[in-house]
Image (cartoon, protein in one colour):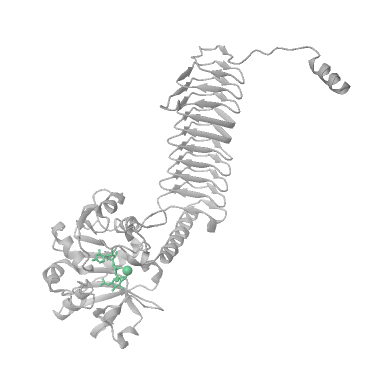
Length: 464
Ligand code: UD1
Ligand code: CA
């Protein structure tokens, strides 16, 4: 990686047109914030410590939202324009040589290949830098590219300042610049807020450097889709659908089968192994990872989960922050949350909820159970209707169930509780005390029988 690349990401604006209290770069597309999406692309061409994000609106929240370590931040207290934002970054930058890459913080679709192309385009000595341009059918709102001699960019004219002739230009500035760092820092103070908005326009640097005899070269990108800058919620939704389609495509090319690619929502950071089948309407969110040879059933929603290899997830499983062991099966209609963990070859069936529970290898809970704050060993059988009573109205308590235990149906396990290995719990029991190894525990009323009672009752009713 070239250490002579310094990157400034402009992310201080509120984004008025989003009509939201939330700073623009905090809005999400593809399951991650606009800013994180850009950082992901930029990290392919620069080291984290060479990246400075200029923040302002909700600076603390924006800072916290960045998950890439090592990124530096510069504060722009008052948003006085994109040029002013870069000036605010100056103090955080020691490198004054090499290439200075500047990007708007609201373009989440940018591909690393395009950044590479911009950085790698060779310019003759004496060039002031290069900027990406693209042609739009409707250029409204964008800065227009005014070309001069030799095809160089002579100036960028903002919508508000443009005359009729300039407004007719379809080649626009998507907000992606690569300046000669030395020349940029030498002349940046020449930007003046001499426009109706009284802002410091970064785009003025193009005209400034050109006038000093340092031409700026255009790097024309034909596919304008990836240069879309997000200004409204409608553009946000468009970016989101494009990122999702790209992700599905990337996974399919890596050997994942997706039965109805248009219906699934897979976040950008998700990993899925080859030969896994993803059925329709599945959502894979956050940092979810899925092994090879799995099947993810229709309608399942997994967030921040780690799924092993050869796992069968049946339809409509909802799991958060949980681990699903290799060769196990889960669902349909299973809920797992708060670090629930199932071991290898285990089976969790319909209408079972696991919360903060470790469920051992080869164990089964096939139907209708709530297992919360529990540590469950290997080869345990949990009968239908088993409930761990983990909450006493004040505190949560743990249930320990050792290896080989059989819990009969409809058992109520009142925590704190330990059931030692090999024990057997009779169906319908309410268990409140420790159960010893290999014992049978029965916690229910004894059954009594009254001979012929039912028949006598029927006969009596008939006479009435
Ligand atoms: C800018 C460009 C315009 C280009 C368009 C592409 C300028 C003057 N104009 O206009 O030529 O076509 O982007 O989308 O640069 N920001 C700050 N601090 C500020 C102002 C803005 O950090 O004081 C950040 C914003 O958070 C945003 C980015 O800079 O991420 C662009 O700002 P925005 O207001 O969207 O610029 P445009 O008016 O769209
Ligand atoms: Ca914009």
